Length: 444
Image 1 (cartoon, one colour):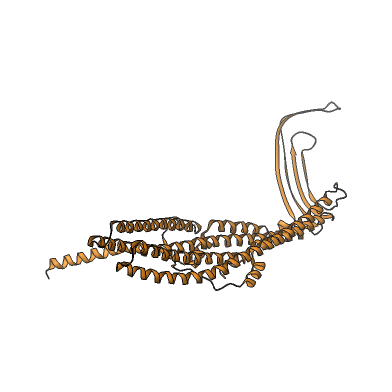
Image 2 (tube, helix red, strand yellow; image 1 turned 90 degrees about the vertical axis):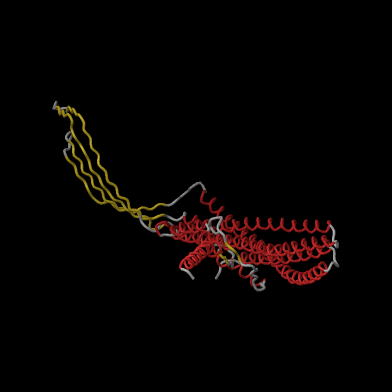
C-alpha cells in the first residue's frame, strides 16, 4: 500500500470517527426517566413545592419565646436639640437682659425595659398556637408535595400508556404496508381488485393518522411533565415501557393509614386544636396583667440666655404595674361564645371531611378491585384476538380471506390491545389515588 493510500485511509477513518462523535450525543440525549427519577426531580425542582417549603420556614421562624411574649422589651433613645435666638427680658426690678444670637442646646438619652411577668398564661397559649401553626404549615407542605407528586405520576404513566399504544399502531402500520403490497400484487396478477387495494390504502392512512395524533399527545404530556419537574419544556426524555403495578392493596390497611397519615385530615384535626387554644387565649384576658419597668435617663442643657446657664440630670426609674379589665361591654363574653362555636364548627368539619375521605377511599378501592379483574379478562381477550388475527393474516395471504375481513380481525386485535392498555393505566391511576388518600405517596 502506497503512502498516499495510507494517508487517505487514515483520513477516512478520522472522518468516520468524527461523524460517530457528532451523531452519538443526539442518540443518547434523550434521558431515560423512571418513576423514582421523576419523583426525585419533582421534589427538588417543583416551584409549588419550593414555595410551600419557604412558607413553612416563615412559620418555623415565628416559633420563638419573644414572639409569644415571654421576653422583655428594651428600648433606647437619644437625641439633641439646638437653637439660636434673640432674647430681651425685662424684670420688675427694672433690670433688662438683652442678648442677640443666644445659643442653647440639649442632649438627652435614655433606656427602658418593660417586662410582662403574668398575663393569665396567655404567653404560654400564644407559644402553643405558634407551634400548632407550624405543625399545620408542615402538613400543608406535605399536602402540596403529595398532590404534586401524584400529578407527576399520572402524567408519567399517561406517557407510558400512549407509548404502548404507539408501539401497537406502529406494528399495525407495518402490517398495513404489507397488506397494501399484497393487494397490489394480487391486482397485478388479476386475482385482486382495485377496490381491495384502495381499501388497504385507506386503512393504512387511517392508522398513520392515528399514529400522528398519538405522537402529538405524547409531546403534550412530555411538556406537562417537564413543567412539573421545572425543566425546559423541550427537554427530551424516554419513559419505562411497562406499568409499575403495585401488589394488591388491602382496604383495612389503607383506611388505617388514611386516618393516621392523610395530610388534609390532619390539617382539619389541627384546626380543632387551634380553635381550643383560641378559647383558652380569650379566657386568659380576664386575668390581671402584671409587669415591671426599669429605666435610665440622662439630660444635659446649656443656654446663653434665660435663668439657667447649664442643667444636667440623670438617674434611674423603676416600677411595677398591674391592670385588670373590669368591664368591656360584655365583649369578652361574646368572644368566648364565638370561640366555642368555632370549636364546634371545627369538630363538625373534621367529622364531615373524615366521612368524605372514607367514602372516596371505599369508592376508589371498589373500582380498583373491579379494574384488576378487568385487566385479567382483557389479557385473556387479547390472547384470543391475537390468535384470531394470526389466522386471519395467514388466510389473507393465501387469498382465502377478503381485505375487509382481515381488517375486521385487525381492528379486534387493536381494540383488545387498547382496552388492556387502558385497564392497566386505570389500575395505576387508582393505585396513585389510593396512595394519596392514605397519605403514602411519598417514598419511605
